[in-house]
Amino acid sequence: MSLVIKKYCVPTFLEIFTNSDAFVNGYKASPLYLNELTDAQLVVVYALLSAKYGMNPIANKTEDMFKNKVYSILFKYGPTWNKKLDLQKKLRQLTDTELMLGTTTIYNRASNPEQAPSTDTLDELTYINDQNTQKFKKNKSQAYAELYTILRDDVTDTFINQFRYCFRNIVAGDYIWVEEEENEEDET
Image 1 (tube, helix red, strand yellow):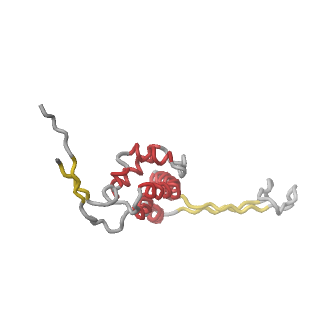
Image 2 (image 1 turned 90 degrees about the horizontal axis):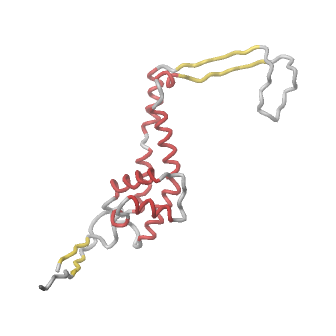
């Protein structure tokens, strides 16, 4: 006989989702599935959840309720997290020249244009008499400070922290169950 020791009365994240395929396929089979996240991105979410909550016991008594909570968080916050990651990538790829570009303001004046101005459209007049332009350029420290402020927030940490409600706040053992399992022995 062998002994099996169980630390919690509910399963942990990794006991429910033993691998990324179980996680991805479970989410895709749920009614909360959005096809805005690719399988590869869902594998990344699984890896991030495993790293942070892998051995944590779930907050629910049933696995189905736990899965619904996880899938609802993916439904609500997953697409926004994905878009923010994309924007951060684009911001990190900006060159110094692009960072230092400021705003451009153009003032046009049209005296006696050939067409009557309209108040119900945003279309511009095709005829102008004179134009005044203002171009602003940022210095490097201002450009870097603005970029730093934008990139300072970790969008992934904010996203993964949304799942904290799916797990117990205090992770301590409930009680230990000792179960005996019979081993089959050959009698030869």
